[in-house]
Length: 332
Image (cartoon, rainbow, N blue to C red):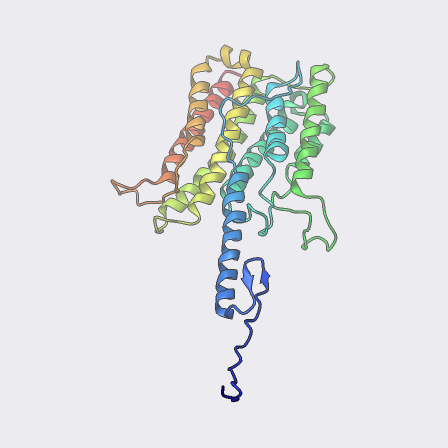
């Protein structure tokens, strides 16, 4: 037997892998970076795409009725209060969402809510100046004055507004909730017959004139935008479209209920038919639901111009409301 010493080469021991969630020490940095990028992209899509879409809601329900109305009060005031509460509390106010919220990159619902609040604000202002005052000359109702002032608050103010203060401020939704409470307080007093709600023909005429004027300003914006030479996929077109949609929708519901408050005036003036036609026009303007808002050339035979169609219905409603006002004034 040979006495030679056999020396075998040493095989280095395999280094144990230490795992972290989704990573392994020893993995190439490029692989780690790639996985991290994909993970962040997935979270981005889930947060802003999925969750943001779930929170994004445009409620243009034509059958909406106030869930808790003041019995014996004004139908239109009940509707104004209910619409504010629905958008601010039930659906959540999104017009002031900062960019890091799930809805931060969704602008259709915020614009729709802005349009609604603009219509409600205009109605409340006329309520304060015309319907809620004895022949427009008595003292202004304190609850209506408060509601009207609160509804003028900018819709995009969040809890921080660096233009005003470095400290937290009251956001838009807080102001609007307070306005809804003021409207309910006024309507409760109307039901108790201790607050004024004038159902005179001239008060109705002035109110619808001002509401029609507000719609007219939006129709003029549509005209200016459509007449400009813009690309069919216009990033501003959907902003204008959804503000108008919100205004038309809220105006439809408010005027529908105002028609119940002034039913005798409308019937006695022979205006029932044109009143319903005005409501039909506003309903059509509020119910378009395009997947993408297109701003094609008016001469195009194949591509739609949703702003142009919406503007047509707005203008038709304005003409019909103006006709109602003229008839009322002519018979005074």
